[in-house]
Image (cartoon, rainbow, N blue to C red):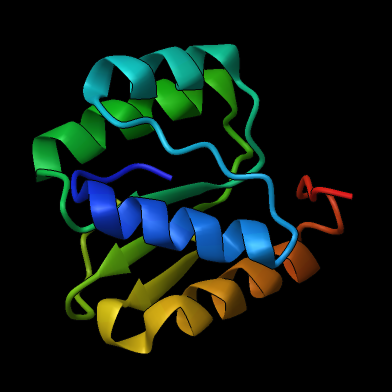
Length: 118
C-alpha cells in the first residue's frame, strides 16, 4: 500500500490484515522503493495522496519488478488518466469495504494468488 497519509494508511492496513491479507505499508518514499525492489507483493494499492509524478515513478518501478502485478487506485473522484491503468479503482467515500471489494475482484480475476495470513 503506497500513500502519504500515515494514519489513514495504517488504518487501511490494519483493516486488511484483519481480513487475512498480508499488507506492506512503507511510510516514506525510500521504504516504498526498497519494498518494490524486494518484490514481495502481489497487488499494489496506490493512494490519491501521492502526487502524479510520484505515482508515475513508483508505477514504473513496479512495472520493471512485476509487470503482471495488478494496481488498485484509491481516489477522491473517478477520473480517467491514460498514464495510470489500474485493475480497479476505489473511491475514498466507499471506505475500507470498497477497498476489500476491489481486492476480492482482483483476486477472482488473477486467481487466489494474493498472499493471505493463515
